[in-house]
Image (cartoon, rainbow, N blue to C red; front, side, top):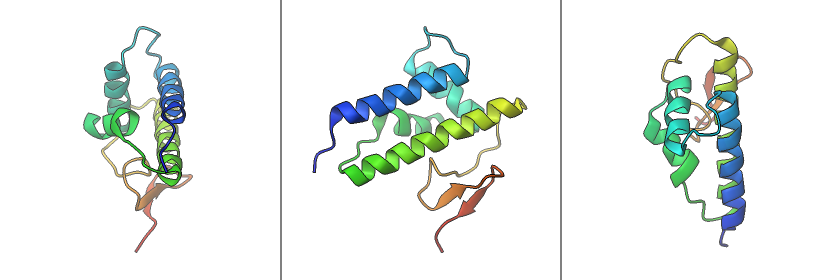
Length: 114
């Protein structure tokens, strides 16, 4: 099954807009600006964030749902870091970067598979 490009675009555009607001970047921020600010805020490599926000190409509805979940996890990670306002996070593997981990309510990561 082919994933709707319009659905994928809407998902990404919505995420980029919310990240822009959360990071107080302003309307002139480019996608690269958003990627760098997001990566810095969550302590992740910008290439990982770019893959998620721009380059990932889900091939099925299930993959699109997984991407949606990862984008939501990224937005939540940014919101937590902005709320804490204590500088860049230490690099960690979280739900938006690895299918085998998830972020629990305390903001720490846990393995979800053995």
